[in-house]
Length: 193
Image (tube, rainbow, N blue to C red; front, side):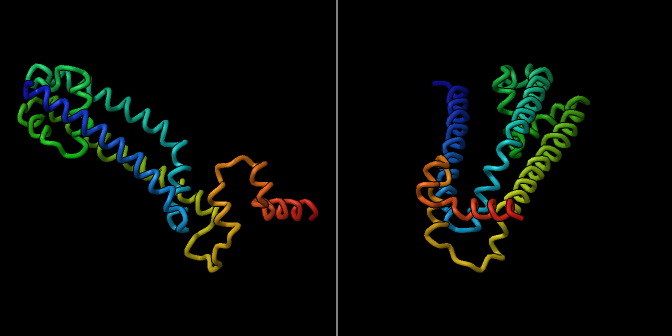
């Protein structure tokens, strides 16, 4: 097995490991929702997914454009940039501060410097701020929906824990358990006024 094949296998395994750890983290957060603070965090993450999907699609488009540019600029100098997949992976890993930046600057062409400045302005500075903005908006909506956990002084009763446990179940099942009585009483009270 050649060294290049070993390195590309390592990159694939690293990507698979990151994906697996993300799934494990989401399952772990689901269990931690019993704590009110983690419940707010969970609702923040779930609320942000509808905004994160277009953001991730846009990020993939930007990284694809960066991959095409790096493939054209440095494909003749470095074997890693000769294929689109290698250039895409190198562009994505450059966000973590991989040593490829030294390679970009050593080539010393004017286009390398321009690409370096535009890449770090757009991809490393602007796009993470957009992601943070999405999470902040989702957190605001979660606090408005379920309340600030630090201000609540009441303790959770069995109905709140059952509501937490069965929140993914259909409404007819929740009605049989009596988990929606408070919401329906509030709705009837507001209709009478």
